[in-house]
Structures are given as C-alpha cells and as structure tokens.
Image (cartoon, rainbow, N blue to C red; front, side, top):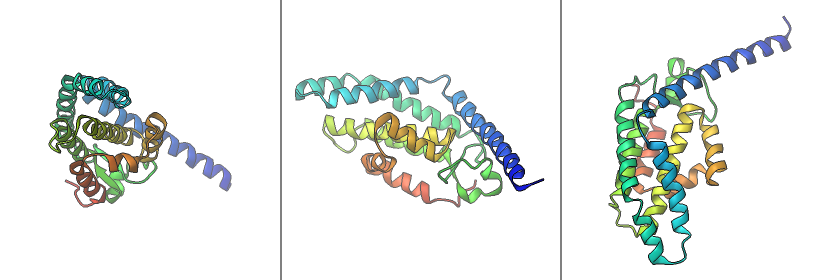
Length: 206
C-alpha cells in the first residue's frame, strides 16, 4: 500500500472518529438543555443589550435594560441548573480538549490535554450570578456590557465542548464580531480569574 493511500485511509478514519465524537458531545449537551430555556434567554439578552447600549437617551436606555430583569434571573437559574445536571456526568465524558482542534477521545489516552467542562459551567454560573446581582456595583450600561461578555464566553464554551476551541473562536467572531480574548477581558474579574485558572489546570482528573 503506497503512502498516498495510507494517508487517505488515515484521514477518512480520523474524519469518522471526529464526527462521531462531536456528535456524542452535541447530544450530551442537548439532552441537558432540553428542559431549559437557556438558549432563548441568551438570545433575548444579547440582542436586547445591543439595542439598549446604542440608545442615545440615557433614561430610555435604563428603562430598556430594566425590562430584562426577569429574563436575566431566569437565565442565571438555567445555567445553574445546567451546571448541576452536567455534574452527574463523568470527568471523562465531560472533557474538552485544550488544543485548538478536535482530538477525539484525548481524555482516554492524553488526559493532560483536556479540561473539565463541568467545572467550567460552574465558573460561568457563578460569574453570571455575580453580574446579574450587580455585586460589582456597575452602572446599568456597564453591567449590561459585562453580562453580554459573560454570555458570549458561555456560548464559546458550549461550542468548544461540542466542536473544538478553534471552531468556538471562529463562531464567536462570526456571530458577535469579538475575539475570545476580548470577551475574556470584558467579563467580571470573578469570572476571568476563575476561567484563567481553569485553563491552566491539567491535574484534576477526578
């Protein structure tokens, strides 16, 4: 068998493994999201914040932002529920590969290259609650700015789990015109510091 054919067979096998692996992750996350309204709440808030932030009249801006209070509370509760539900999954099942590309089943043979998605969801849940409760004492506009970044980063994490870090980066730029690093710098310090520690942590395999 010549080298070209070997490479072709290897590429085909890799593609099959990658698709199967990603479909399993998508199905897992979808199962836990099925009884939640998280995606709908996130879309309502990201679109609503964008409109409100561009309001020229400050009073009108504050009024629009205040109208999202119920959705914000529901969204924070939903992400907390998701984090608790995903905690029931095993560390191996709920792993993401730290590399920019998908490496199917890396958690089985190269666990040091993976991170725990369950822990990441708890970071997002705590960070979102911190901003929703305005523990930083921000103005309505600044609070909406930080909360938008929190939602963008959460979307990035979900796409990372389902596909890969590289795909998540690309989708974040395509949908929201923002780089991952910029989103990370725009979230609350509570989320940012916990997220950075999570990125560096390759030892927790429990």
